[in-house]
Image 1 (tube, rainbow, N blue to C red):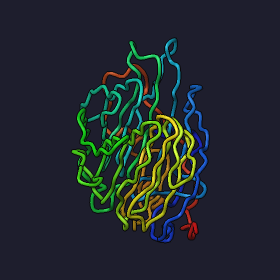
Image 2: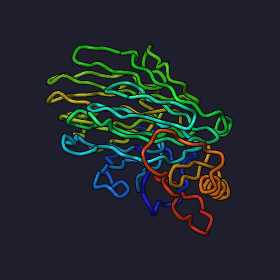
Image 3: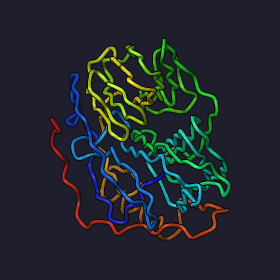
Image 4: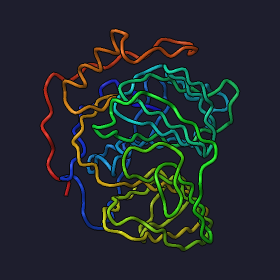
Length: 322
């Protein structure tokens, strides 16, 4: 799922000034966003009024569980991306991915769909015509560092991912490294993304990297993260400086752990693009509207999305969050 907001903000994110260098417990409430012309609603956790990035993670939407038994489900027309990676992660349902480099792939629960946009790609996302009753998942973006933001676009699908286990806990490593397990997905910065499945009554501690900053997104169930109850669709920002994370589940629960080295570069985000300046974004918009650079998605039944209007002024960098 992508940013279909027709009036998106132009945002400056990243930079060490945004990072909390010590352990904290900041509970982030989601912003509810209706996607495009549909009534499909997501809960947007990043970028957030109080927190713009977590490591290189710069965009997080949580959606569902939605009953789509009598509905077409996800139907997102072709649209562009540049300067980032998209991570599609499902707990229920299926999403058919098509892109302008020729990929055609159905992504299923707990399979990694990883699209590296690099210099530019376009894609569509849709529920298959015959689909499961429920759709539940998260869409996340990873900002590419300047040295890699113009790489050739490509798509990776990994049906099998490594796990870290402890009594009552199974952690599926989506991206980067957790403990001794490393995802096969290509990462361009020191990063981690993991799906944590906790059995009811579990109390455990998860090893962390003290140089990383972290956050935890609750997908389902009742869990406490460092003694803070985190409800489904909310996110707890944890700061840096942790070597372990206490977890406790009062019911079967599922969380997503997101972390990484703080992203030093300042980035500019607008719609589905990440650049380093207003000019980068303006050029991306022009290239999309004139049909160059982002290629063509073949096989989707419908026209591509037009780009929203770009604000006329340059952004000033923001100050520290804390």
